[in-house]
Amino acid sequence: MPERAIIVRVMRYKPGIIDPPRFENHEIVIDEERTVLDCLETIRTNLDTSILFRHSCHHASCGTCAMIINGVERLACITKIGYIEGNVIALEPLRGFPPAGDLVRNMNGFFNYYPEPYNYIRHSEMLPPAAPLLEIKEFLRFENCIECGACVSACPVTDKKGDFMGPASLAAIGRELEKSPERSDELIALAGGERGERLCERALRCSKVCPMGVYPAMHIENLRKKRINA
Ligand code: SF4
Ligand code: FES
Image 1 (cartoon, rainbow, N blue to C red):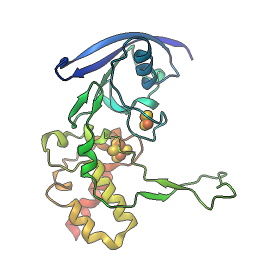
Image 2 (image 1 turned 180 degrees about the vertical axis):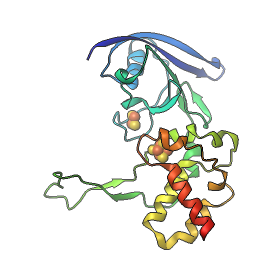
Image 3 (image 1 turned 60 degrees about the vertical axis):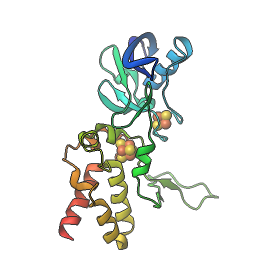
């Protein structure tokens, strides 16, 4: 793939030092096969060691690299430069969470919203001709949700109504209901509580930005129908 000269605009914020937040620009040349996360690592290695951002897996599994890329919530590790229009990439931290610094948000609140204890492991879909290795009976996989927070950031209600438990938590309740229908009374009551699905305004942005196809809005709608028909 060809290389491209790009300007990476990084929203900087360090309480008391870079305060209020502001964009800082860096010009780099990078292969179009590379990702936004590669851009950030190039900048940190060669131009500015002080930039804060989160990442771990580099392959859309850990959810830590979610950020707003040119106005849309995405995973930096799988957003390739070749798919971005223009030569400017603006990077901002997720909305709806307290700032920690630069592109990092404090995600504690997100995990506090999750109902627990729930079993988040399920069987893996296995497309032929894939088969388990001889010594393995079957594959297990975690739920699709990687707790990236993109849906919460994109949701127009989470900022406005701070009590809303948010699309990811409601999707988790919806999945739990699919797996454990015998617990429907408890789960529908949880989803239908004061902080639950009744606060959702059906913007559907959660489903649009979810990188894993969890479709939180679908779960929210299903939960709403079940509550109304209960
Ligand atoms: S539902 Fe999708 S967007 Fe929301 S936290 Fe899970 S993976 Fe991320
Ligand atoms: S680094 Fe793990 S999802 Fe992007």
